[in-house]
Length: 175
Image 1 (tube, rainbow, N blue to C red):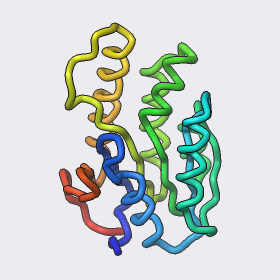
Image 2 (image 1 turned 120 degrees about the vertical axis):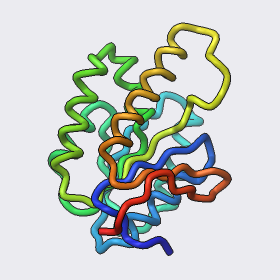
Image 3 (image 1 turned 90 degrees about the vertical axis):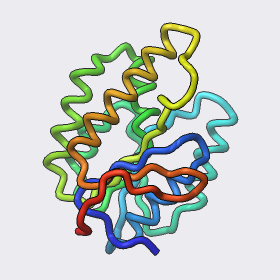
Image 4 (image 1 turned 30 degrees about the vertical axis):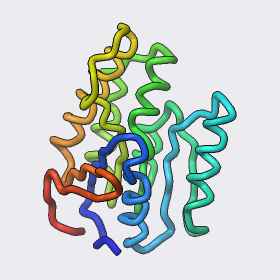
């Protein structure tokens, strides 16, 4: 069982790396109730199934709020232990909505800075693969890298999950 996290933790990893389960365990080490800020949108049957799988895994003490675009506002309003899953789906939603990514990032950073914590943010590390073959995919990859860098600079702890194992990239004291 993980120790309670510091005020702000960023958990990154590839697809099916165990990042969400690890992040959930971090928050569950804190007194509840726990808030899950979900950014996924179910555009197809596969995503409906993935969302249902995530929800089924969580304990009953979790409260879930769907925030596909309004993540900064939800973080700002939250108190108590909060899990954001995931930053890269939020970024995808912003790109599809043709939102101002810089303005949204600034608002998220400000909300995270004010959050009392613990706050655990989950994102997909997409920059370790090949260079995407189209402009939209390259824009997304670059935007995700910039977002993660900015959040990592502010986070008390950064963890990279690989094959279900947490690798501490930036250590931080427990809350």
